Image 1: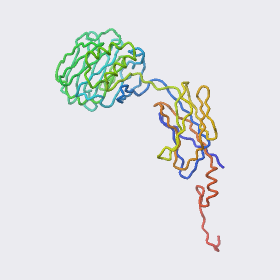
Image 2: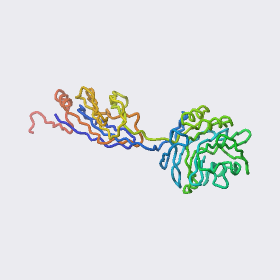
Image 3: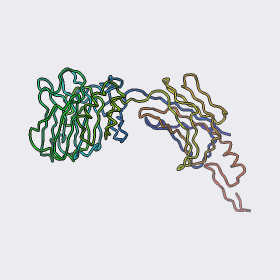
Image 4: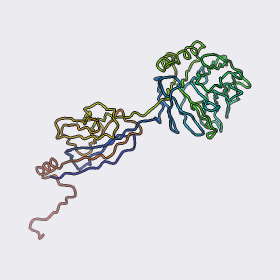
Length: 392
């Protein structure tokens, strides 16, 4: 009998560990141990709460602040190349009707920005929406520029955006058939003036930026932003007013937005889930799932790291009071060459890290098979041929 130790290389963050039995071996697994470190805090991914699946990312990180709608968090201030939201595919068909809406609070008299930009259409984004101009010209501003566009500028009247440093619900609606646009502040239509040119080729727009201008990435654009929603319809004044009326609490506001069917909706409160996880130990034959063994205990909320021990010789499961050490009794694990063993963790987060994965296996069964099979030879064995009657 020999007992071998297999040290499994650490996988990248956010990836489960796995290892394969080499083709000439038969592992009789006697134990597996592993450590999982989970992280909590702002997430690099922005989840689309609409249910449509238009998820985005926070490429430069994500600072969380108290929400501009009470009861939730918001995205922090952007300065230069600071925090912003990026969605790298079409959210709505910009050639049709649409609405953009979110809450913003300017910081230190600076500008609050929102951008819808087109990839590959020149040095400037095809369209940008500046929701809050600085005093004395406090207005909402929407401009279409860039290659392939005739160019058009829309602006609300001066003074239509309050320069009081408080959170405000701002939005813009566009009706394609009549080429009409309206700006809203706190649920009220404040009007719009088209300064020059037709709207242009909206079909070029395919990437959504919030709080960032890719053409001027080092320009300071400071604002708190929250609850971004984009619709494939032009909301009515009554709908915009209803959203304003629901701003008192996160639950009522989110329900009002979802009732109007947004194509994308971002709470901008995304966090990595701290606490424990639910890793299943899985065995495959290289293609098909052969066995899945649950962790036997629900994920805990206490901070890790979390140590797991899978023991075929144990007839029971155990977990320490703080949930940081879990022992799982498993059935016998006799794995031939080509089989894989590893974890599948459905709630694994992008920054979670598996490490210290060690597997022990015994050669008892493999040695026994070789003893009763005269045609089986250990790895590296050689045969010598000698003719009968000939000298060695």
